[in-house]
Image (cartoon, rainbow, N blue to C red; front, side):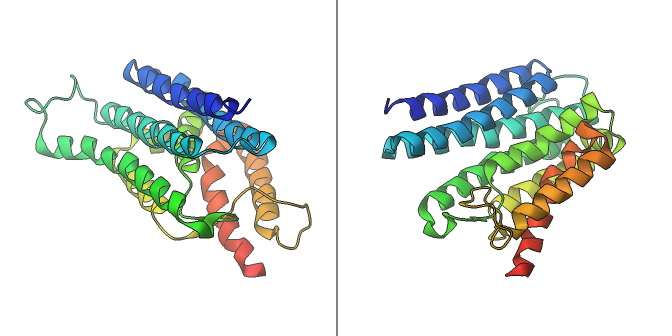
Length: 241
């Protein structure tokens, strides 16, 4: 029983790796759903560890390694492929046949897995983040990326479609998400011990704004707003304290 959380964490890692394979083959939608599965496994491994009291140092390290792959490398790979498409590159990227500017744009995606790794290293050594986060959690980083792909694919959202087809927008998105991960901005943790409004103001604001966004945006068409709404709710919730 004590190995069940680590098994679930391994499924997270496997989902991230398989997602990268689908990105390489050009199927960004399936890759995005696989990362959503990785997020579910990421939640379940912690839940099962708490339920069975199966904590271990190996589990903690394995969780961070899996998150770097699934929520750092994989979403960066998706953005890399989107950049290739937005610039309409005729052939694969190589050092010999790619211009300096194009090369710099494509390789800018490396900042995302690097910042994800830094974010996880900081989180593992920062005891102040037990009840709230400082900086964007790595699963939220991945969700910000895949929600664009899903919104554009299933709803035809004009905003999401523009974001995934604009080279400057993709570069800016990469930099912003990466810097948010290593920032010290206080953000909500979805863990709560009760349902009272007091002390959970940010969580209730998040539910309200997410509901409004989905109604006005037509369901999946508003999926790309989840992370902006999460950040706004986190900051707004602090006003009540």
